[in-house]
Amino acid sequence: MNKAMMNVLAVPTVLLGMVVVGLTLDSAGPGDLPLPRSLVSECQAQVNAVDNCVREKIWNAYPQGWAVRTISKARLSETEHRIYLMTFYKEHQYQILACGDKSMKNVDLVLYDADGRLVVQEDSQDRQPVINFQPTQTDTYYLAVHAMERVQAKKGSSAQKGTVAVAVTYR
Image 1: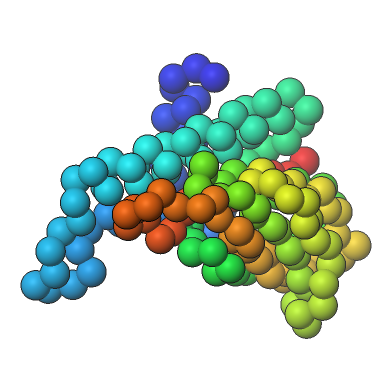
Image 2: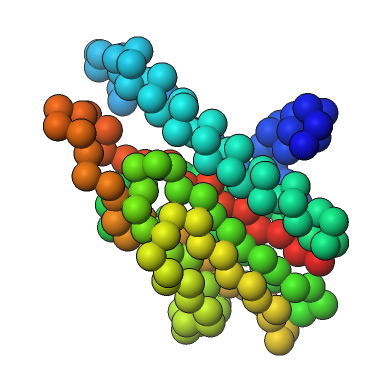
């Protein structure tokens, strides 16, 4: 991927009307101590790794006609999930992919319709799940990203959360 393309993918904070979730590395509130520099460096390295993973998958999909709809990332503890509300259009095919950092052992993607009924679920035992989906009608859907299992943390490690990047592509 050329450097200019990587910068284009890294810059947007709102893409097609959807807010892209960012990561803030600071203290929790007034009077709290800032995070140790080593922990901030470790978190930033994980964020960079998932950013690179998802960008590479997007870049590799361009020749097959896929375009980026949304890119987002979240910090999740084991068994925690994040839900994204989105509209999918009948005339498009969608590919939803995720990349978990090295602290994630298993990440799952689950898509629900507007009434909360299961539409499609990807539940393989890895940290890079993919869902392919073509809606039968234009509608609102809920995408749940689950951090099902994390790798055993190193003894004494204060890292309680891992980073997961999610991209929605369409054609």
